[in-house]
Image 1 (tube, rainbow, N blue to C red):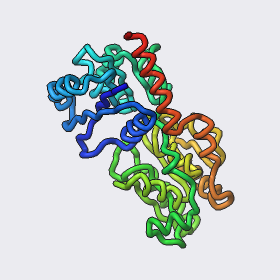
Image 2: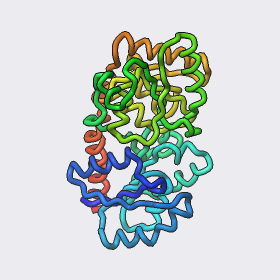
Image 3: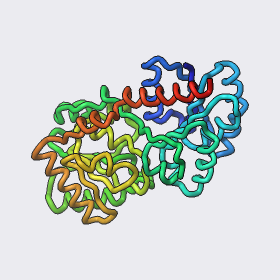
Image 4: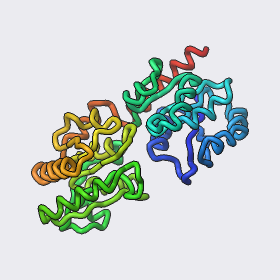
Length: 314
């Protein structure tokens, strides 16, 4: 089976969760050929149509799997090869472009949504929910002191890890920063708030393991990978109720759902740090495994979907 994977690399690199999914599909015997969209905006995507037609002619794929709505629109300009489109969140949550995703969902042979919430918003009864998996070989629990040493962090300091770059406005870092600074002032703990900014997958794993907990205060999410990665490394998590976070962490001791209010975030952060001090971590990895959210498990679900589509077509 040969599949063309369409995704944006306009920011000079493929999103890690898409690259990981593609590699996991390859590991179970599916030939994946990457088609990269190197320009932003709907016009930027549509300019790639001739290049896509050329790749289809040369590679003769069985299927096209597009990631995000704009990629799905590009893929569906041709009608010979069946298209599967995965919607990851911004393509549905953003009201300005949501209508494009609705059209793409109806043009695609099958739509994948990474959360039930996104499927509900799309009003697509024929879509399926398959989140992106987490690489359990990379995101593994480690001794905190070892992880700090790997990242050259101060062994005497306690760290809290923010879910993204501080300047990513959708992640709402000012709320997390204010809550962290206020808690630090009240408790006089030697702490530092770190941001996730341009690290490798191994370094993200090390930073999670070096931190007391992960904090996410986002306004909007789909199925956030960093939450699953924190669970896989047994890190406590404090997060706003966004995307699929509640269903991922609601029954994991040491994790807290908070409101968009300073005191709520402070209390959640305090509880997570206290849990880390008392118990060292959570049972998040077991939760990930029980819910079949490993990369290989998700790859097999996608493979089954591919096979069902090809069986119907033949």
